[in-house]
Image (cartoon, rainbow, N blue to C red; front, side, top):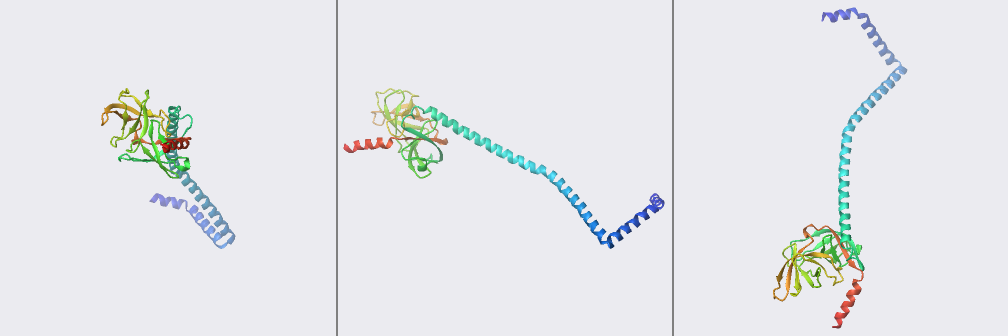
Length: 283
């Protein structure tokens, strides 16, 4: 404490000078309008510069959080883009596969378009599938539906933008088929029980069939071209009356995972159906 007092006494003339200078400045800026305005302007400018500097510093350090947010948004967008690319590639692959697999059957008067399943029932005797294409897309009743595995069903009813498909898993569904490698034609019907199996009925007993034989569309209708895959024979059974064979067929299509579909239409269907109906009327 004594050292502080000695320091103040030793340098008292400097402290007195500073005090008098302070009083002079107060008197100068208090009673002289020009100096007062100049000081006010200078003070505001200095304060403004200080505030601007502080704002820039805050903004700089705030960029870290903003950049982190932008990085997270970019990551989410990149992830979404990659997912869309994969879905598009998958759809293109399935389209190319179907086009290659069914190139021969689809030659001639048949044309096909793509669709997606938007609803699908599995636990009923008469199931239906809803697809996202309708009359506005050129879809009409009695057009065939298949995917890259094989036959799915037949268009049953349409609206402007949607269609109902009667799949093979419907007790009212009847599909004209044949066993590949033979000239024996038969009908495929579902018994309303197992999702992966259906039955060929009225197989002639003289025909030779084996386990593993492939079942395809017969081409004896205006709905499907010939040789679209359906399934394969798992075993042969006697019909109820014992006059024919009945074949248990494992379907190629997994109806529990229906998604990308193809709708096939016969451009000459109306002409063919009209001609065949006229013959029936004359009987």
